[in-house]
Amino acid sequence: SSYGTYKVYKQQMLRFAEFCGDEHDAHNVMKMERYVKGYLEHLIDDYHKGGDMSPSSIKTAACALGKFYGKSYLNEMETPSRHIADVFKGRGVSERAKEFSEKRNADVMDFLRGTGLRRNELTHLQLRFCR
View 1 (spheres, rainbow, N blue to C red):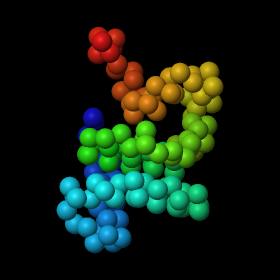
View 2 (tube, helix red, strand yellow; view 1 turned 90 degrees about the horizontal axis):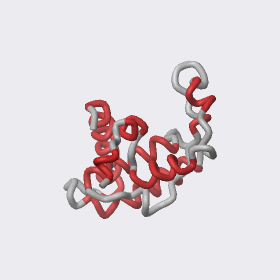
View 3 (cartoon, rainbow, N blue to C red; view 1 turned 180 degrees about the vertical axis):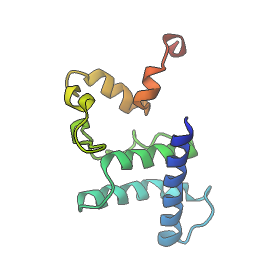
């Protein structure tokens, strides 16, 4: 993982720890694992009520927690769908987003969701690593 990913995952873990402290008076990070699913459900419920976390941020939180606890929480619950056309970075829709079709790339999207890989990690994947 890159340093940028490390910083984002650390931020997600701090948010989770704050939630556990506030909601469950839990302060031992190793004992907080039992609250992961409840936390993610809280984020999903908040999103459906118009909260400020996007589907991408919820998935990032699930990946960060999964990385820390050595589990894949994305496979255990349904998170809100994210659509690349809805992602705005900068001042408008990127050229890449305009040309990307989730339907045309359904196999790739399923693979990414199933493995938790990010686009950058997929570009570095080599066949020799898949054997």
